Length: 325
Image 1 (cartoon, rainbow, N blue to C red):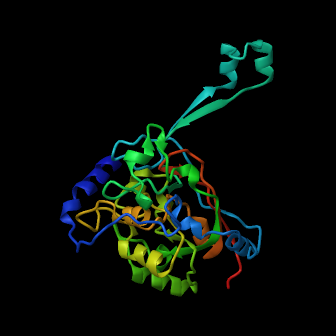
Image 2 (cartoon, rainbow, N blue to C red; image 1 turned 45 degrees about the vertical axis):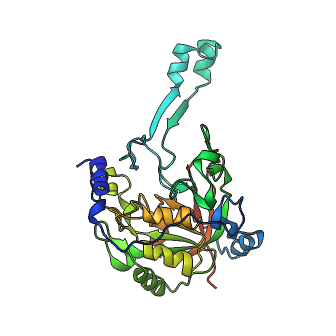
Image 3 (tube, helix red, strand yellow; image 1 turned 60 degrees about the vertical axis):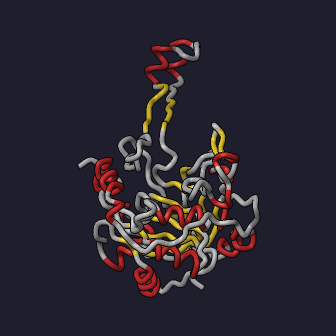
């Protein structure tokens, strides 16, 4: 079955999932009526300096995936896949002479150029706070009628996302439980047990990364997209409300699993984090090397492209081990 058919089938199955309903309301920011970055306000010069001062080596882990034609992405709703093409090639410039400098020059100086086209929510990327809303509003009460123009959002666009430097914690669920079943939802109990086994405690303002093991299949789109596990709504609430984390990330396609655990919301984890709590998150991360080396605490350093008005942006996160405290 094609990935598109799989995802559409999961979405169509939503009415079959029934849980207790609860009120969902867009959050008003404690950082003020003009706030556009939510919990990233928890970062300060002091918190950044604190984590950087704990770096113990130059060992650096790249937490991003590669972009390539055929890479896995969420295209069930019609969003475009990744496309790459060459605009100039060494031999082509000799034939076409686009610079007007002639064959001799173009044989001496080779020239390669290329271009890409892609959905902003592909590969390792961060979701901006305008990505999902509730009842006609996004985080902090901004509305499309007032704040969305033909060239993107005037509020909470990806260009507002600051560089992120904070303590990072890996919660390696797969290492603890083994291969996760299809559509498995990671529970609060799972997170607590993994953290206990790893000997790590969470702190206010942490960046928490959840490893499901799905990144092992990233180069095989059919396998990567097929019935992937994700985090449950209760587990996310525990991280945000009880542990006061600042940012969340995972190695699967959409953070949460499908079909939805609620009958009245097809992406309850997304709307809870983005619209209700102002918590951004990173999807499609590569956490395998970090997990293999059992690096559970690190300085998390990342920046996204400043795509004005966009609902998400590619990101290149790094992890540098720190001393434990």
